[in-house]
Image (cartoon, rainbow, N blue to C red; front, side, top):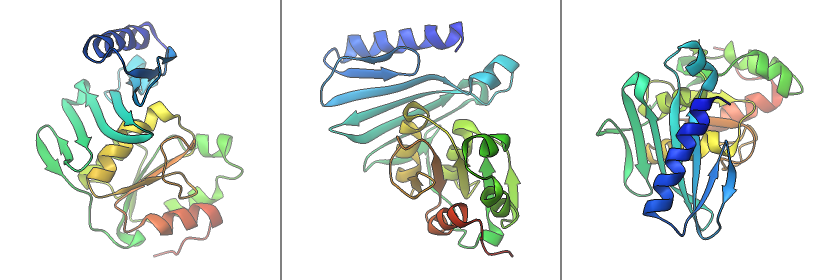
Length: 221
Protein backbone atom coordinates (compact mmCIF):
# COMPACT_ATOMS: atom_id res chain seq x y z
CA UNK A 1 0.00 0.00 0.00
CA UNK A 2 1.28 3.48 -0.88
CA UNK A 3 -0.03 7.00 -0.53
CA UNK A 4 -0.74 6.89 -4.27
CA UNK A 5 -2.89 3.75 -3.85
CA UNK A 6 -5.01 5.39 -1.20
CA UNK A 7 -5.32 8.70 -3.04
CA UNK A 8 -6.33 6.98 -6.28
CA UNK A 9 -8.99 4.90 -4.56
CA UNK A 10 -10.44 7.96 -2.82
CA UNK A 11 -10.82 9.70 -6.20
CA UNK A 12 -12.46 6.65 -7.76
CA UNK A 13 -14.86 6.23 -4.85
CA UNK A 14 -15.82 9.90 -5.04
CA UNK A 15 -16.52 9.55 -8.76
CA UNK A 16 -18.71 6.50 -8.25
CA UNK A 17 -20.55 8.13 -5.36
CA UNK A 18 -21.29 11.16 -7.51
CA UNK A 19 -22.43 9.19 -10.58
CA UNK A 20 -24.03 6.16 -8.87
CA UNK A 21 -24.83 7.10 -5.27
CA UNK A 22 -26.83 3.95 -4.60
CA UNK A 23 -24.09 1.50 -5.63
CA UNK A 24 -21.75 -0.42 -3.33
CA UNK A 25 -17.96 -0.22 -3.67
CA UNK A 26 -15.30 -2.77 -2.76
CA UNK A 27 -11.75 -1.45 -2.90
CA UNK A 28 -8.40 -2.91 -2.01
CA UNK A 29 -7.45 -0.04 0.29
CA UNK A 30 -10.69 0.80 2.12
CA UNK A 31 -12.85 -2.32 1.92
CA UNK A 32 -16.59 -2.37 1.33
CA UNK A 33 -18.95 0.59 1.47
CA UNK A 34 -22.69 0.39 0.81
CA UNK A 35 -24.78 -2.53 -0.37
CA UNK A 36 -27.11 -3.40 -3.23
CA UNK A 37 -27.38 -5.36 -6.45
CA UNK A 38 -24.65 -3.30 -8.11
CA UNK A 39 -21.10 -3.31 -6.76
CA UNK A 40 -17.96 -1.66 -8.12
CA UNK A 41 -14.72 -3.55 -7.48
CA UNK A 42 -11.60 -1.38 -7.50
CA UNK A 43 -7.86 -1.94 -7.42
CA UNK A 44 -6.45 1.60 -7.55
CA UNK A 45 -2.93 0.47 -8.50
CA UNK A 46 -2.46 -3.15 -9.51
CA UNK A 47 1.28 -3.77 -9.55
CA UNK A 48 2.21 -1.42 -6.73
CA UNK A 49 5.71 -2.90 -6.41
CA UNK A 50 6.33 -2.15 -10.09
CA UNK A 51 4.94 1.35 -9.64
CA UNK A 52 7.28 2.02 -6.72
CA UNK A 53 10.34 0.74 -8.60
CA UNK A 54 9.54 2.61 -11.80
CA UNK A 55 8.47 -0.37 -13.91
CA UNK A 56 5.57 0.54 -16.23
CA UNK A 57 3.59 -2.65 -15.41
CA UNK A 58 0.86 -1.14 -13.22
CA UNK A 59 -2.75 -0.23 -13.84
CA UNK A 60 -6.03 0.87 -12.32
CA UNK A 61 -8.65 -1.90 -12.40
CA UNK A 62 -12.38 -1.21 -12.15
CA UNK A 63 -15.14 -3.80 -12.52
CA UNK A 64 -18.90 -3.69 -12.17
CA UNK A 65 -20.74 -6.60 -10.60
CA UNK A 66 -24.53 -6.80 -11.01
CA UNK A 67 -26.55 -9.40 -9.12
CA UNK A 68 -23.38 -11.39 -8.51
CA UNK A 69 -22.23 -11.40 -12.16
CA UNK A 70 -19.25 -9.39 -13.39
CA UNK A 71 -20.51 -7.35 -16.32
CA UNK A 72 -17.98 -4.57 -17.02
CA UNK A 73 -14.20 -4.43 -16.78
CA UNK A 74 -11.76 -1.58 -17.33
CA UNK A 75 -7.97 -1.91 -17.13
CA UNK A 76 -6.15 1.41 -17.51
CA UNK A 77 -2.33 1.37 -17.75
CA UNK A 78 -1.16 4.95 -18.32
CA UNK A 79 2.55 4.10 -18.22
CA UNK A 80 1.97 1.65 -21.10
CA UNK A 81 -0.34 4.13 -22.88
CA UNK A 82 -2.96 1.39 -23.07
CA UNK A 83 -6.49 0.82 -21.84
CA UNK A 84 -8.48 -2.38 -22.14
CA UNK A 85 -12.23 -2.57 -21.54
CA UNK A 86 -15.19 -4.86 -22.05
CA UNK A 87 -18.90 -5.24 -21.30
CA UNK A 88 -21.03 -8.35 -21.45
CA UNK A 89 -22.11 -9.08 -25.00
CA UNK A 90 -20.17 -6.12 -26.40
CA UNK A 91 -16.72 -7.65 -26.96
CA UNK A 92 -13.32 -6.58 -25.65
CA UNK A 93 -11.25 -3.61 -26.79
CA UNK A 94 -7.82 -2.06 -26.35
CA UNK A 95 -7.40 1.62 -27.20
CA UNK A 96 -10.57 1.46 -29.28
CA UNK A 97 -9.70 -1.64 -31.31
CA UNK A 98 -11.45 -4.99 -30.96
CA UNK A 99 -9.24 -7.72 -29.49
CA UNK A 100 -9.51 -11.51 -29.50
CA UNK A 101 -7.56 -14.40 -28.03
CA UNK A 102 -5.20 -16.56 -30.07
CA UNK A 103 -6.03 -19.79 -31.88
CA UNK A 104 -3.01 -21.75 -30.61
CA UNK A 105 -4.20 -25.24 -29.76
CA UNK A 106 -1.03 -27.07 -28.74
CA UNK A 107 0.96 -26.48 -25.54
CA UNK A 108 4.17 -26.97 -27.50
CA UNK A 109 3.31 -23.86 -29.53
CA UNK A 110 2.03 -21.75 -26.64
CA UNK A 111 3.46 -18.64 -25.01
CA UNK A 112 2.88 -18.63 -21.25
CA UNK A 113 3.15 -15.70 -18.84
CA UNK A 114 3.48 -16.04 -15.09
CA UNK A 115 4.03 -14.02 -11.95
CA UNK A 116 7.06 -14.34 -9.66
CA UNK A 117 8.16 -17.98 -9.74
CA UNK A 118 9.08 -17.91 -6.03
CA UNK A 119 5.40 -17.34 -5.19
CA UNK A 120 4.59 -20.81 -6.49
CA UNK A 121 6.88 -22.31 -3.85
CA UNK A 122 5.52 -20.01 -1.14
CA UNK A 123 1.78 -20.37 -1.78
CA UNK A 124 1.35 -23.82 -3.33
CA UNK A 125 2.11 -27.21 -1.84
CA UNK A 126 4.67 -27.78 -4.59
CA UNK A 127 6.10 -25.67 -7.40
CA UNK A 128 6.95 -28.74 -9.46
CA UNK A 129 3.71 -28.80 -11.51
CA UNK A 130 4.36 -25.20 -12.53
CA UNK A 131 7.99 -25.93 -13.39
CA UNK A 132 6.92 -28.91 -15.50
CA UNK A 133 4.38 -26.74 -17.29
CA UNK A 134 7.03 -24.12 -18.06
CA UNK A 135 9.11 -26.82 -19.74
CA UNK A 136 6.11 -27.95 -21.81
CA UNK A 137 5.40 -24.75 -23.70
CA UNK A 138 7.17 -22.99 -26.54
CA UNK A 139 8.08 -19.82 -24.67
CA UNK A 140 7.64 -18.24 -21.22
CA UNK A 141 7.79 -14.70 -19.90
CA UNK A 142 7.61 -13.56 -16.25
CA UNK A 143 5.32 -10.59 -16.93
CA UNK A 144 2.94 -10.84 -13.97
CA UNK A 145 0.05 -8.79 -12.61
CA UNK A 146 -2.73 -7.53 -14.90
CA UNK A 147 -0.60 -7.32 -18.05
CA UNK A 148 -0.15 -11.06 -18.53
CA UNK A 149 -3.92 -11.54 -18.69
CA UNK A 150 -4.37 -8.64 -21.08
CA UNK A 151 -1.71 -10.19 -23.33
CA UNK A 152 -3.88 -13.32 -23.37
CA UNK A 153 -6.95 -11.23 -24.25
CA UNK A 154 -5.02 -9.62 -27.13
CA UNK A 155 -3.76 -12.97 -28.45
CA UNK A 156 -0.11 -12.09 -27.81
CA UNK A 157 0.15 -14.73 -25.07
CA UNK A 158 -1.88 -17.92 -24.88
CA UNK A 159 -1.81 -18.69 -21.14
CA UNK A 160 -1.31 -16.68 -17.93
CA UNK A 161 -1.19 -18.17 -14.44
CA UNK A 162 -1.07 -16.83 -10.87
CA UNK A 163 -0.94 -18.83 -7.61
CA UNK A 164 -2.24 -16.14 -5.25
CA UNK A 165 -4.55 -13.19 -5.99
CA UNK A 166 -7.58 -11.32 -4.63
CA UNK A 167 -10.95 -10.42 -6.12
CA UNK A 168 -9.93 -6.84 -6.89
CA UNK A 169 -6.88 -8.15 -8.80
CA UNK A 170 -9.03 -10.20 -11.15
CA UNK A 171 -12.60 -8.90 -11.47
CA UNK A 172 -11.96 -6.49 -14.35
CA UNK A 173 -9.58 -8.92 -16.05
CA UNK A 174 -12.11 -11.75 -16.14
CA UNK A 175 -14.61 -9.68 -18.12
CA UNK A 176 -12.01 -8.56 -20.67
CA UNK A 177 -10.58 -12.05 -21.20
CA UNK A 178 -13.98 -13.70 -21.54
CA UNK A 179 -15.30 -11.04 -23.92
CA UNK A 180 -12.15 -11.52 -26.00
CA UNK A 181 -13.15 -15.18 -26.37
CA UNK A 182 -10.95 -16.70 -23.68
CA UNK A 183 -11.48 -18.50 -20.38
CA UNK A 184 -10.72 -17.33 -16.84
CA UNK A 185 -10.77 -19.68 -13.85
CA UNK A 186 -8.95 -20.65 -10.68
CA UNK A 187 -6.07 -23.12 -10.92
CA UNK A 188 -8.67 -25.80 -10.19
CA UNK A 189 -10.78 -24.76 -13.19
CA UNK A 190 -13.58 -22.95 -11.32
CA UNK A 191 -14.98 -19.92 -13.14
CA UNK A 192 -14.63 -17.12 -10.61
CA UNK A 193 -12.49 -14.07 -9.90
CA UNK A 194 -12.72 -14.71 -6.16
CA UNK A 195 -11.00 -18.07 -5.83
CA UNK A 196 -7.53 -16.98 -4.76
CA UNK A 197 -5.68 -18.07 -7.91
CA UNK A 198 -6.03 -17.61 -11.66
CA UNK A 199 -5.57 -19.11 -15.10
CA UNK A 200 -6.49 -17.14 -18.18
CA UNK A 201 -6.16 -18.73 -21.58
CA UNK A 202 -7.40 -18.71 -25.15
CA UNK A 203 -9.81 -21.47 -24.11
CA UNK A 204 -8.31 -24.11 -26.38
CA UNK A 205 -5.53 -24.88 -23.89
CA UNK A 206 -7.42 -24.35 -20.67
CA UNK A 207 -8.31 -27.86 -19.56
CA UNK A 208 -4.82 -29.08 -20.36
CA UNK A 209 -3.28 -26.35 -18.19
CA UNK A 210 -5.66 -27.08 -15.30
CA UNK A 211 -4.74 -30.75 -15.47
CA UNK A 212 -1.02 -30.00 -15.73
CA UNK A 213 -1.00 -27.77 -12.65
CA UNK A 214 -3.01 -30.33 -10.70
CA UNK A 215 -0.89 -33.33 -11.62
CA UNK A 216 2.50 -31.96 -12.59
CA UNK A 217 2.62 -34.23 -15.63
CA UNK A 218 1.86 -32.13 -18.72
CA UNK A 219 2.86 -33.62 -22.07
CA UNK A 220 6.28 -32.56 -23.29
CA UNK A 221 6.84 -31.38 -26.87
